[in-house]
Image 1 (cartoon, rainbow, N blue to C red):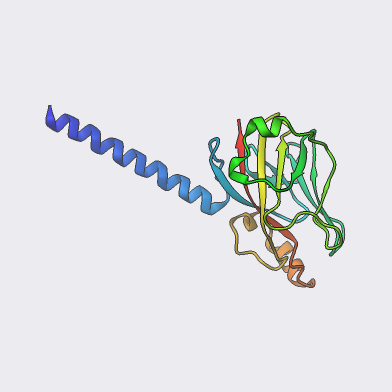
Image 2: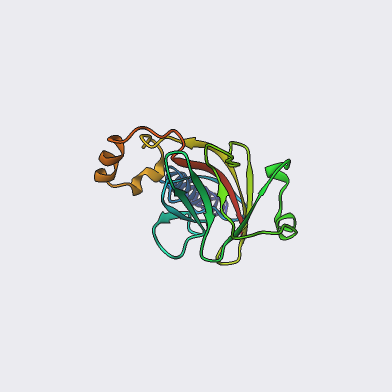
Length: 184
């Protein structure tokens, strides 16, 4: 009986360790989808769309936000496909919960991250409702430069695009790094 219990306990530890390693590899590869209400970090690529439920980026219709680069100095975080958002001031990210988000007047209006009059600076929080109806929050951690390919989401960028980007002046505010949490 003791051997059987020991065997089962060791098996459970090994399976848990494998699952934890898989999650860490997914986080490092930029493909990790957190289970609610875990917090994740993502870099939203400039001129790309991001889907909160899948934590994937691309130019497809099933996304929630578009990080629009109008010019080198003008950019916007735009809710798309029916998603809605609101910029929140003077709040603690960790204290914002679904009830707080439900009380907000969310809209489809874009939020400026532009050099002049932009409101998306590090520390700022955006609460949102996804196109699928899930609630979430994100906090701006920092911007990433156009020439920076050192983060996992850069895997979406082709070598041709990277070469093209390196031929342009380095825009220090091209990609948007956020920490976020989704409530399902």
